Image (cartoon, rainbow, N blue to C red; front, side, top):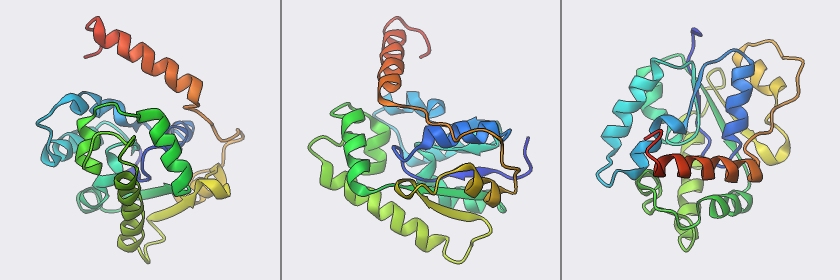
Length: 203
């Protein structure tokens, strides 16, 4: 286990899978959305349930990223002082295109908890407002805390090992930044997961 916890608090569709893979390259045990996936099917899901589950996950991992970790930054900051927070953003337009393409009109109670509605298609204004609100509030909350917070712009090429390693105090590995979760790969994994759920595997 690493001595310091790391939280990726950029919203989904901001390169969270690549960030997770990069942290694994650096020797971190990384947790993400998979640990919460079953909750997305629970119509009675509450924030209290998410937070309780998140604390249990922190005990198992060095670093956390993807949904729902971005909306838990205040709780995690208070519960685990000295942690590091990595905030990745991308242009609102490209973020919305990616979210709409991947989530469409698929029901998801975790999304409902975060955005106020299940999916982005037809609710673009609601999702955009929440995304931009989150980014503003994160910057305000961590203002002046450069030692434990970094905000990087995906569109400007700021998300790289050099910036991340300098922030975490880790040596820069002699490998390229991983680019994962491309569209074709995402569709394949979602199809496999859907089939497994239908036959009762991995519930």
